[in-house]
Image 1 (cartoon, rainbow, N blue to C red):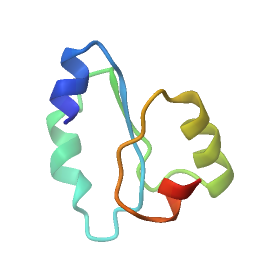
Image 2: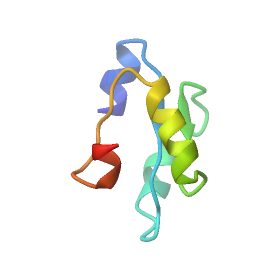
Image 3: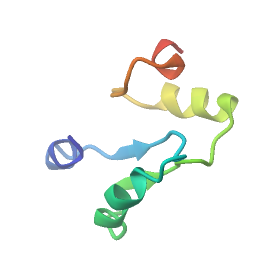
Image 4: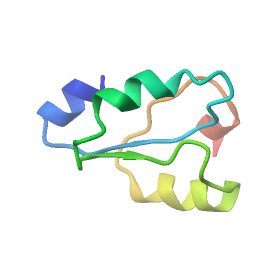
Length: 68
């Protein structure tokens, strides 16, 4: 999905909690790409709401964030 969004000239912001360190491998692939912003484990709920309001699309699982 990230590659498809980047191909359409969109930027990508990745958020969430990385308790199982599942994002580390994904983020290694995009470390040098300025269009991919890693905010994993960095946002409060208020900050996350602000980031979501700035975006045009949201992709996620059925969690509380999806319902914000």
